[in-house]
Amino acid sequence: MSNKLDIVDCQGAVIGDYSLPVNCLELEKGTQAVHDVVVAFLAGERAGTACTKTRSEVRGGGAKPFRQKGTGRARSGSIRNPIWTGGGTIFGPKPRSFSKKINKKVRKLALKRAFSEKIAAKEVAVVDKLELQDHKTKNAVAILNNLKVDRNALIAVADYSENAVRATDNLSNVILRKADSVNVYQLLRFDKIIFTKDALDAFIQRLV
Image (cartoon, helix red, strand yellow):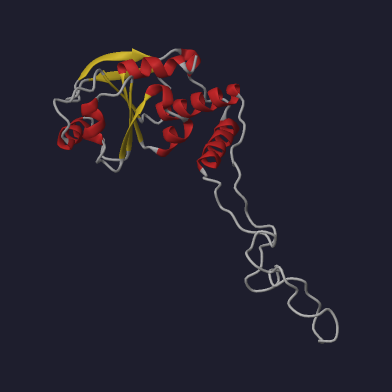
């Protein structure tokens, strides 16, 4: 696997190369770390707001529905008993957090492994600068076409610009993220990762 990437301009012409530090690449280990981090990320995305009522929380049911003995029926003390229609729920969900704790070293290893796999698959592109004259979506599409990106893509930038944000906002298969917030799940989800040179510099600092 080569540790050099071509740097292109917005027209797709190669204008230089980018040498990746050897210590930011890892293909020998980290598959389990990637799995754990992705599971933790998706768990953290869950709202955890599902809520059901127990028999003590359901409205009504204060009076005993019928006398204890003599009716031939099983005894009951409340119409909100869980086995009755309209009763409470047994062991139902309550609001809670699904977040999982992942150690910092494991997160770093997973990010390094996921990035290395993208490099090995030649699915990472480096753009010198993301220059948009205005906020029109067609200009963003033109740049992606010049880079021969026709699939879902993640564009990583060092900092947001209003034109870039608005130009890519309507593209359903493209998201714009700052390099310091790109995570393992996003690296795996998108077919193509596009870094600006400054963004890649900032991203590499997270790996070394």
